[in-house]
Length: 293
Image 1: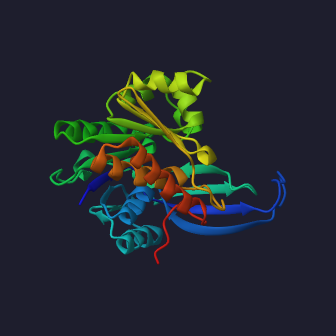
Image 2: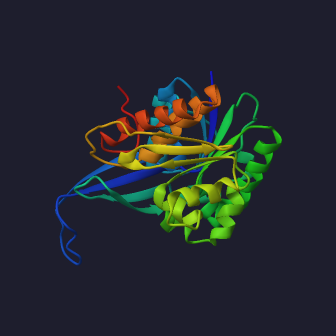
Image 3: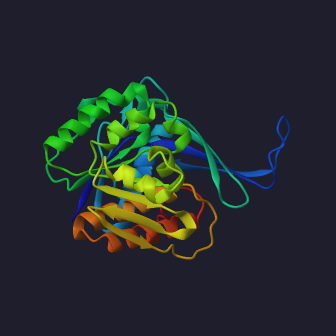
């Protein structure tokens, strides 16, 4: 069975579904709920729904939220060790979801900022690794994660990278993000992120530019499906029609569908289709995790 190591973050998502436009400086009607989250943690839970295995490297604080998030991972069968530490509190992401299901996020990395190289488990048995962009964008965890990447590459394990949102990437120089992309066996990003990192408003040119840094470029196109290029092969698949409730976690679920299938088959079309299928399930519910039933 394929096993993926997911490196990055575990956090609490506080989701506010807005019923109207924001009334700045005043009340705005909304429906608020809390859900387990964190980019790498989301990917790991969705991977367990693909008949693959996942192990998470992240951190939570020694607080009630941290205990609850670890318990949730156990329900999904995600492997983990050494997640809880005293010091910083558990990370929290506040997410505003508008009437179209589009989300705006306000992340606080919390305890995830304190990742260390010793958090990396023995690498025997892993078929691939996923790295969350938040883990590298946070200067406090960056050196440790770069050291992890070096060890994973030395072990011959392919690494897949999601650089996160354009807004998050802009806290460091674009050239630095590209230096991380060059370490990876593949990158997964949406069209806005691709245009930013690929330095072109033309998505095909941006994709070609990114392909100079890493052999596999996967671009998520939302309702228009997804594309990928690998060693000159270009594939595009359509999205699966569904009722969009909340797009939180859509990219994470896509990665969880794509990566195991790609490692198993080396077939771009199959892998893209697996990603879009899982993403369709994600956006049809509130929150970034798969249903437990």
